[in-house]
Length: 335
Image (cartoon, rainbow, N blue to C red):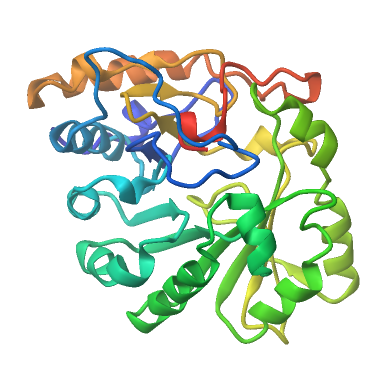
């Protein structure tokens, strides 16, 4: 099938938002116990006769999105590197015509040993979660004493040729939100884009949200007051407001989903590890695609289903109203 013409098949909703970015979950399993996601650890959902998308299914869904203008795929989980075929997944996605960026989000515990293999397979961008530079607080937040393993993995990524690594930090009041000076010192001489993410309310985390949510606005104001400048946003970039400073090799990104008009520039769709299309991280339900991933002859029907349901995408999430949709925790559909 030829690559879709923009006029006919570009993924676009009724609000004229175009979708160049697919977040593809390959598992909902995670080996960390982060307080804001899986504080009690991963628990199987009890699904019967089900499994995560296999390699041919992943290839077909990515090809369909690529044929409709998607140029960036982010592989997510759970922890995606728990898949034994993770490197093969990277290779298949990177070899798909039209895909220009293959990114991943990881807790980083396997990076030191395997990041070179991922790069050779075609992984172009890495996001690593590091919620504190204090090993004890890192352990407290993640439930795992892996701080030094993760930090070694980041350094290894630079050694094998990555020019930049993005580091995700979930902001939590009374835990890590006072650590901005420490983080700034860390990125002064390192090409790291440090991304502060506001804690988001999910179905299982209401109390945590009430106790620890803090807005990123104060950090933004502090950055601007100290000479940081806002970078232009690229077509396939995520939702972060990215700031740079002439005295720093690193950058700062702010992800603030509670800010007005946050969804105005939405350019990404999600497919879960079970093959469901999610129009929003905080939507009410997913659209099953898996019955159209059985062989290579179903792409036209697959695209038609995606396009049809995309026209029902809401103008915004409803987090401001306390409505978190059907998302129980961030690992369930890849954050």
